[in-house]
Length: 486
Image (cartoon, rainbow, N blue to C red):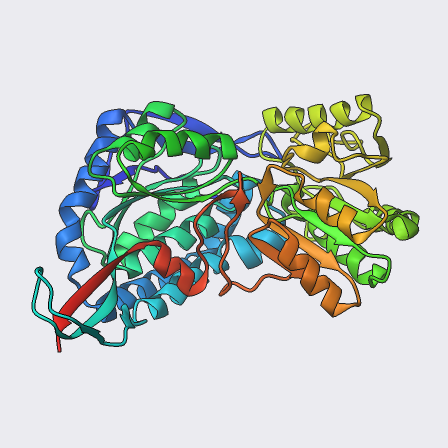
């Protein structure tokens, strides 16, 4: 991998950061490169640049915004040979994930919102017959709802899918006519810095896309608290989301928060167990469990409990833990040694509370280097155990039995989280009824596949707001009413 110097981008120019810090490959523990660390003053300058650029950018035509987003997507695709190994080295993603998701889906999201820029911003309304009042003469009064850009958006993302998550914020924000300040996760920001460089090469005007970075809290809080920041779009932990809400609330800033998850997966006695086991297993080790939509709480009817557990035990045998660069590796490392320690702490807590390990539970043999942990299955669980209640963000699944439908729903809803849940049953009517009772932003019925046009977001501590498809455009807009006499 060629050595590259990464800089902040403020008002269209590369800016030398106040400091730099090392990015570590989770698989090899070797240095991937040095990332820029922004000062508070530089973070504030990035917000000011975005605010100054907003009036002109918000008046550009949708066709022009679409053209630039499409061009940026083309440049990302053209740089895939550079970006794929960089993302893989930063994140520890296995080859297939880096090759098919981390990079190409970033370009795909920008293309989706290039098309989205051309969607109508007008919501037609029927004229209303209004009587004369002391306020104004009566008559036939027309009106429309108009989606207007919010202004300056601070885009802050998590480490698991650095480019894809950021593209999912950049695309709709720019398509709607907003300007942005990008703040990637501190663990793996290099590909995002490169993506912003490529986007500016596509021709976006200075100040429309700015990027700052670093490990320090003050600079991050600066782009949230700045008086010229109008909206914060954040993907990450609930704890950080709460802090953002506290900082932003006093200024009535608009929020889009996609936070933690503890996906409930209800498996009924009439479920297609092969499909349920296959679906759960497919996400169990995906990106080493570092995915918020994973079905990490399997709530299974007691009559099929042992069958499902045996199936998952068998599936674990096909989940090869290994170097991400090997094409047959299924489970790579987690992002840092600190995070691995945290996952191990949750497993230990479960065991101390009475759970049992059916699969895994420790570090794989033969890996003295890298932050590896085995796919782990905990059984004998109750919904009150620590690893059942808290988001682990690793390759750990817990299994909780139930006896009837009401109990299954009660267990699923007895959680602080409500992002993505699942129901497996051959009875489509029952599955539909249960799905509607779940306090979860998204529910999959007999599938773990996504529909990227569907609204995405969470109930309870899993977040505020919705993005995805055209809902993403709505999220980065303010609804304005325009009224006139007919």
